[in-house]
Length: 125
Picture 1 (cartoon, rainbow, N blue to C red):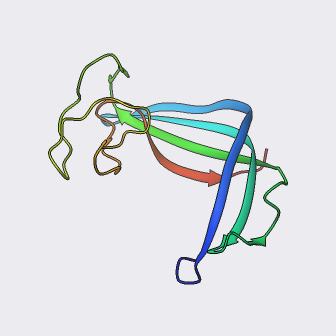
Picture 2 (picture 1 turned 90 degrees about the vertical axis):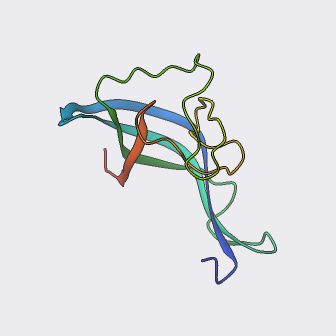
């Protein structure tokens, strides 16, 4: 899509429902599967902000199965002052919900400090 100068926009407006589908531990990894139904906008625009597909005003109901993983026994903690250094630039990492480096805006969470998304699948509920 980038070569066509088109952008697929998916804006989540609200969460309609959430169900924990599975929790298990394999080796040293905790695995949590959650079915979440989102109310969202889903459309494609071109570089001039012209809508190509769907409407930017229509809302869709979208159920997804999201698999989260983290190291066994890790407790999410946002009160600590830092959680290590960025592997890309060496900056001190501060815990944040997006699990990104403040400087490079790249994901740095590997499941050692908090849950990370391992997989997202479309599902029918």
